[in-house]
Length: 86
Image (tube, rainbow, N blue to C red; front, side, top):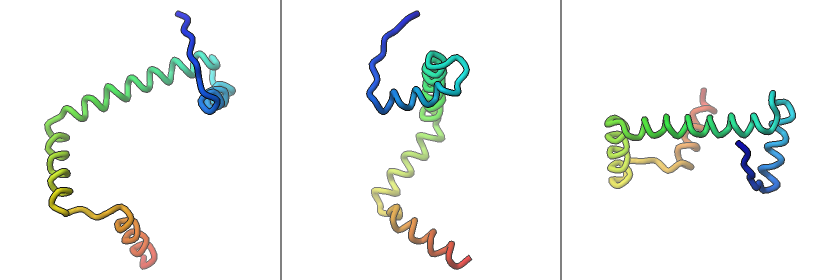
């Protein structure tokens, strides 16, 4: 089945770069990318609907509300300081 897709320049460059060494060229890159995206979405949907994931998200939200989290920049600083001492 033929489809027409309009790409911006950046995406077109990515497609051309991938297709240059891809068996089947551009068509195969696009087909495989769509299949991979669909498989990823299906997997994520399975994960986010599990009771364990929902419990974890509720627990995380509560920790954030109650101030039991460390901001990213502070966590990174802590990690860097640990790296220097080891």
